[in-house]
Image 1: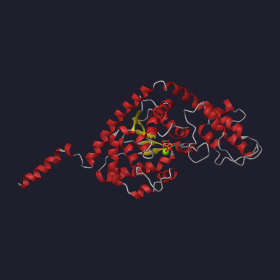
Image 2 (image 1 turned 180 degrees about the vertical axis):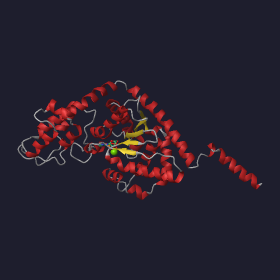
Image 3 (image 1 turned 45 degrees about the vertical axis):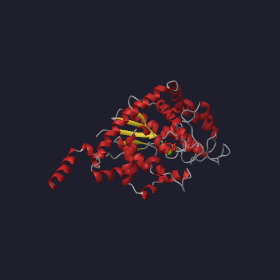
Image 4 (image 1 turned 180 degrees about the horizontal axis):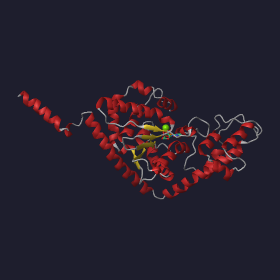
Length: 363
Ligand code: ATP
Ligand code: MG
């Protein structure tokens, strides 16, 4: 069986370091591993419109931002198909049929949708499109017969729901769709990076992000004002690592080699953590170290981005070509789905022959 990746991001803002450690960094590694037959990376504008219907300009403006972030992180259009969701009409068509296979109560139980409804104050008036976006996401994944979906852990309930839809579809209409697997980062802190304010998830909608495109100064300012241990008032106080954002980010970004370069008095992160917990290590020193580590990761991305920003028409062309390629694959799946569901009337010569013989017998 071919190994196929589908994943994507909503163009609701520029991409941040949570996207980077949660999904983007891994995607680039998977792309470069050469182990996958096809890789589809989707800018999910139609999904972004489900909770931004009144702000299409925001979605339109952020398409290019997400594309610039993709390319500057190393996604390569020669090896990965980058495309825009709304340009693939088959995705809407598939969603329409999958809706028949999902109950309202099943959607209501999806914990990510529940949390997102609360975050957006949608409790009293949820747009139907938003409520059903897990179904549309199942269409995105299955249209490409994806086997692997690299995501952060907030997406696990979506992949589970997609797997249920696939099993139901195949049971009712015959084996047609591929059941995908989620691929979350091995390093647990990366699968849901907290915001700089210490809130559970860095998220464009919460305004607690370090963006991949932030300048070196912006990154430094955000790191220096990051949430740490509120009880660690004096340097001599013992510090706690629990919920301490600076240490969580070090877990996500720091490698042993960084100590040699920026903080040679410690051999590794365990030693630094030990000292912090015993007391005698100030937040500022740890934050300065984190800043050095993150600048090292982000600088090459920034440099590539500033080059790519000079080639905007070429990037739209990449997305246009990618959307055409993606559409060919989605159309093949759509044809198979229609045949399985017996709604391929005009392609089905046997149907016409059967109906005409039924009526000729009558005469
Ligand atoms: P929005 O607030 O508009 O939903 P978002 O920041 O949650 O934006 P998405 O476009 O919904 O971003 O998510 C894209 C991908 O990035 C998903 O795979 C998601 O799991 C992952 N992701 C998003 N935020 C984080 C995070 N803080 N840590 C790890 N992965 C994340
Ligand atoms: Mg999200």
